[in-house]
Length: 177
Image (cartoon, rainbow, N blue to C red; front, side, top):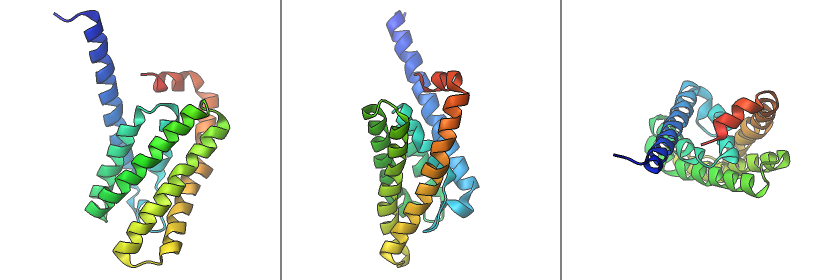
């Protein structure tokens, strides 16, 4: 017979697994569903907006990383993209989570956090595409970075601000373990 602490731990573990799986599935499906604009040197990966979830709760790091791995593995660049893109996303979402903690989830902190994928994915994915397709290195880094900036900073940050203002109570529940 389990005691209450074991039941609580099991419930928390179950919630974490469900959140991780749901985020990974959503990221993967959105990326693959919008594959025409999610891959390549000029990419606008809409699912990357979800990386901002890590700003509010690091619990989302696993699901975002797993979703990226699956989307990249199943995408047109396959294993090389999964092996290079997954660490780029992992580094980005960890940096986003740290920024959220340091800035106490402030609005300016969200803007700063949104720049991490622009930097890390621009460099890492830009380099990957340069090596895979013999594209101009600096141009490719710039193109990937620009896509990340547009999707996450110019679209994602305002979207999160609107959601936080309009649905604060719902989001509070979402970001609780």
